[in-house]
Image 1 (cartoon, rainbow, N blue to C red):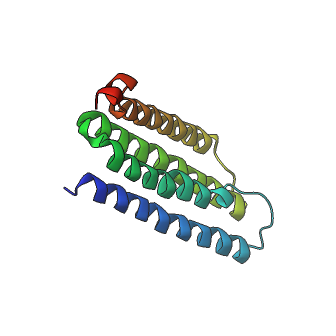
Image 2: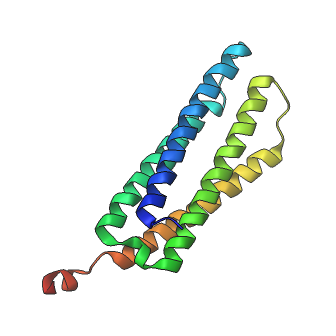
Amino acid sequence: MLPVVKRLFHTAHIYMIVGVISGLYYREITKLNDFTGDTQLGVVHTHLLALGMLFFLGVLALEKLFTLSAEKKLFDWFFWVYNAGLALTVLMMTIHGTQTVLGAKTSAAISGIAGLGHIVLTVGLILFFVTLGKRIPSAKETEQG
């Protein structure tokens, strides 16, 4: 298994690549279908770049500063739950947006699953803040150290 810092770097890098590709996909599918309306595809790349790449670059910096991974079980839960939530959310947005561009009927289930993705993402964020909170020294510890 990769060291945590490398894993965070690779995770951010993968989100960057997928984010750029999703922007290209959005541009090309709308152009090929002469689509000019609103679609969720327009914000998929933003979600991937902000909630994926930038977020994990921030986590990487916080790992170097506070060694978040010392809370091993909590950190691992955060990492996998957050990634699952973001992947599910982005996948459903991509499916919904593609259906919109192609003029296909969209299912309410797609929106429901995307909502579940957002819930899982929120749980991941809660786990992240709990992990971070456990690693930030208290004022008393700061004075002593």
